[in-house]
Image (cartoon, rainbow over all chains, first blue to last red; front, side, top):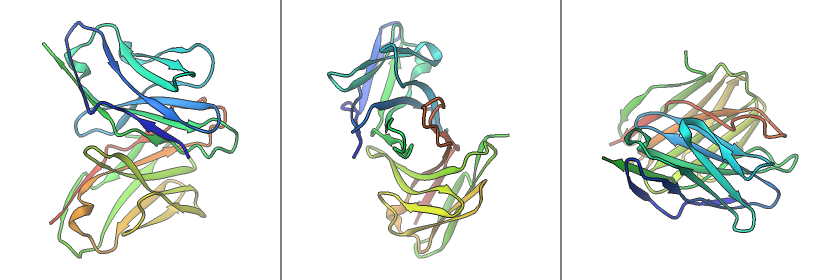
Length: 116
Length: 116
């Protein structure tokens, strides 16, 4: 079975400071990892993904994430936070093996609050 | 027009009533999913369908049923609504994507259901 843990319900950061939203995962095969963002009254929107290759993945709105196989982590980062980054962030994983079913398993979400 | 459309956007219903939530997509994806979102619990899979003739229960299917009327349409029904089914419901679509080239899922904007 695959699973995702987002240990922080909420992360608070001042605008202009770097931010990190944590995610760890468990999956049998090679992990395909995703970050999604949810703004109020909206569906989830794709931010970035890791499939293979470079451990540092760059995505939308200046976000990036670092894949760490030994720590089974995929933390989301941004060098300088904006108030408009305030939203709910979800990490997700699927088994990358052929026939793995393509079902994503989501974490419980982390509310990011960026303050002036 | 949105790629994945959910109707209604908001619904208040009484305990014991039958209610249907509808989802339609223009992505041409074979795979469709229904999730519910509750604060602190993230997204939980209710049902999923890999094609019109393939429907599967997710982790929390009790009290729900689905119908895949066509490749583009996937409806979720609450046969006899109860208050703890009050939640935000999301429909999502994907293609098989064995190589992980896609963005994972495409989500609708959600249906906020309140059972009183």
